[in-house]
Image (cartoon, rainbow over all chains, first blue to last red; front, side, top):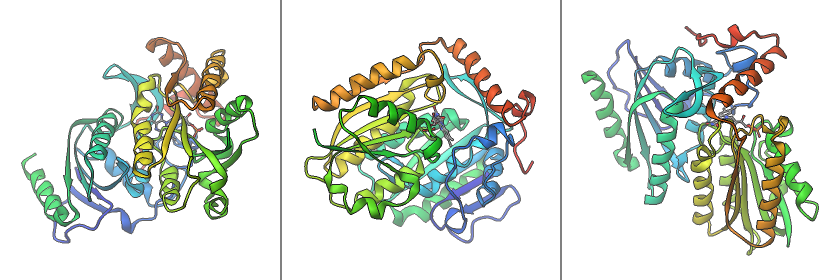
Length: 171
Length: 202
Ligand SMILES: Cc1cc2nc3c(=O)[nH]c(=O)nc-3n(C[C@H](O)[C@H](O)[C@H](O)COP(=O)(O)O)c2cc1C
């Protein structure tokens, strides 16, 4: 399965295929994670907050190809994407394992991912460097086997999204 | 010394580890500090008197390798209000995993926030094993580092301190498994249920 998750609108005419899912976060209602760990200790694999996020994390889990499109803030994913990522922890168990020599959570049924992260806007060099380190850390917790980051201006965003979605064809 | 405001950036503010770390901080800080919870969204009331603070101390958990979304939202608002001219920013961050280096990106995000807004970054304390350490005999390590952290602020220093349970990786895996099994028991959830591979919607 292939998933595009974006905090920005994207071209309407992306290829319609059963294995492709396109999600525009601006159209969803997603609350902040409560930090309750209910998804680990109360209803394992299921978030206690029943808003739109519960439709998204099962898709993230099943996707082999993932495109995240996000604005940045201080070298971090900006709020909409960050909020969704926090709400995706039902994909993991409470239990911890060694992964790349570090302690990380055991994943539930999560497919290993090839991730493309498109960060858009005017992004100064220092902010880019912080973000690269963040994605590298995320790669361990989010089961990215391979990942790349494109920094693009908002003006070039649509064409970058289109090119990355087209690249799924060759995977 | 100047007045200090503690900003709790944990979504579970009242029940948070961050609150406990903030309390330990207060036990060493020579004056009474004020506290504000980012999740309360009462920034309007806070901002009317925020200029009186010489120190802002952010206390928060690591969330998906970075700063929690609730705190990002507060930082954005903070950028829009005038602060005391000599204000200094300090950070106590805690994460669940064993390695203190997992907190580093979140600290760079806060440092970048300061640079962008021409604010002075003071002391940082990065706590690993922060979900559990206070309930173990190693809690004294946090108190010891906190004392040093407070001294650093009072001396006008800018340093990064770290602490964690001094456990081998294998021992940490065992201890954390026990911690989470006990957590599950409070909700009558068995280990087997917690180890389920199923994610809703399958
Ligand atoms: C949504 C979410 C994401 C988390 N992400 C991480 C992480 O990336 N690395 C880590 O070590 N701990 C992570 N944790 C664990 C918390 O940092 C840890 O439990 C901390 O003690 C919580 O502090 P608090 O009670 O002040 O919120 C996460 C917890 C939650 C709920």
